[in-house]
View (cartoon, rainbow, N blue to C red):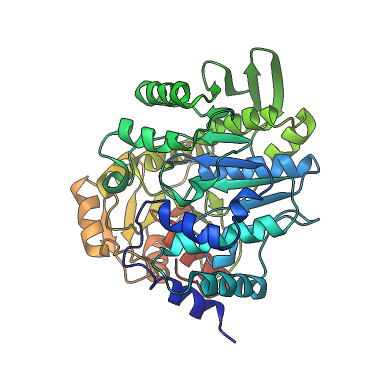
Length: 439
């Protein structure tokens, strides 16, 4: 019997480009599969640069607290591929069983019959089959890249669309200005479906407003139709017709106020009550988003006074919110900060690291194993950090980097591993003693 790893490897060979934004190939395959994308539960389609995963996590928790059965589609995975396809169950959405996933991918591979198609396209087609064949009340569908030409945008009639904060990222694929990137993200808006938008810069807001008018989508915009803010240890959400006093979000960091507020607006649009919204805010979980790692393979040998945090943030906007979050932590619980950083080659490393100047005492750079594109060599990344005035050294891997970071100070220490979701997946695998499945 063909293994899941063998199937995934074969699928990566069906198209010469990893990313080739287009809908023609996937529309052809979906038609041959009986158009499962037209048989999905009500879809909440989520795009944006940062915050997609956290917003999805909040919405999932809110919907499930309301007794709804929820499918979830996200990418990339962190450790195992089946994380991308979470199916509704009595215990909440769970990653699809690997045996079931292997059988599903085999079906799709047979129908595709070797025709050119990207890895993301063929695996998304398989996900749509799984979601169409398993009963649920909602599907939370996260965009892979961009929006307008993303594979997930074959869904013609979503119940709701959501656009999280937009900033510069993937400029080689989406455009070299934030306005061009916003126009691509706005491509998920559909006539007759409301679109909830998070707090944006004025230039992005202008693009989204114009796109909504053009597409006939009702816009529910942060700052105009709703707002959210922290006050006395609570999350206050307000819109024209109501004011909600809610618990602070379980995911930490000032940026999570925006993600949580956006999720509340979306949940209200879906008819979810305040009790379920409050429960979801307080119970949401999302790996590698300012995650404090407990005892495991990596932390076992760390000194007891060392905190080890993990975040997959990798662009300048993520660097800013991470630095702000760590500055808040420093204010409440002072201790020196060491960064362990690995990044992909197409990312703006200097832009990501700049906000940590004056905050991080040391930076240790590492390779990124299992990445589908070349990462920045640790020596080069350390040079970028030193060019910004940061004390930086290169390490051969995460374990060595932890040893180096631990010598930053003899007292209490805070360590953050960041810069790449691929690195985050590798770290979680090391922590849990599992093998990472390449993206």
